[in-house]
Image (cartoon, rainbow, N blue to C red):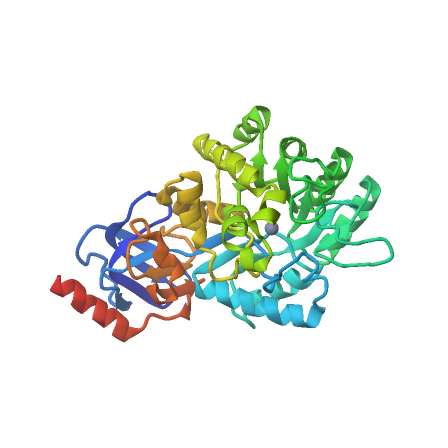
Length: 430
Ligand SMILES: [Zn+2]
């Protein structure tokens, strides 16, 4: 099996909160050996050697809350108005974009139409289109009048949701989605400010018997449930019935925090600061004027979310980046802004979020023993970065600084030999 040696590199391995000098040897699609220390030590006579010129080798990133089927949406009805043919192509392009930026794994936060994630996942897995490892979601399963319900009497508007009311209907629609091939069911258990004022973030929208049935169906088929849960009660009900991934969690009260902490080995929290912070502060041209932002309660939500997410992280609950990218004001490709937002908005150190976006990302993908770390035996999902992302995480947003993207041992973006030579010369001159 072909061997490749990355020499003269710094390593961020996904588990430690620092980088160190070393070497990484690959065999086929897996990491065979990692050496920690200065100077060439791994002897592999047949290996193709890539001298990294001091660049950083790190695991591929995971986006824990992605919507690859959002194509610059300005409203939740935008995807509803997009025909499925256009959506498939748009989603395919978005899958390539996030992989270009180093996202080798994506956990979908919803598919805008029932089979879009599924088809894109299958095409990627078959090697016919470039894209990350993708866990495919259902559309949002939500009750009538929840925040994504854009329908009006006499005027039907589709959005990103399958509307279900009552436990029996929930059973049927979840079984249907599993039949169509999704990896997980997406629920909204609480409301949100994006949409109808009758379903605010603190309100419970989907009832316990409906959540219970969605979870029972998913678990009976070996699938899992991910939930939009801003309200305290939504988190508690979700935990009770075995939801594995919780989005947002802004209004978690003391009891909800204790319950999350008690299950911290099994669950993941993905707060998505972009959906509040960027919407509230940078998106006036998309209609989020100060009046609208105030009406949507975003300043209050930001203040509460800052406090809650900081506490969730302090309690050692896995807090992952992934931020609802794909709206017009949060385009795909900017995903790594999450690392800065986690630092600036929640006060979470960059090194912690980088571990979450790599090592915990592998766990979220259900592959924690072989994905998300630079470690012997792990799959070769590897990035080469021009600089140290712990010292300056903004470089992950710069495509020119992402020198290489490898997924499953295959080059998606190979390093440019001239760029590496330049790097070696400039390091030597220092
Ligand atoms: Zn979302």
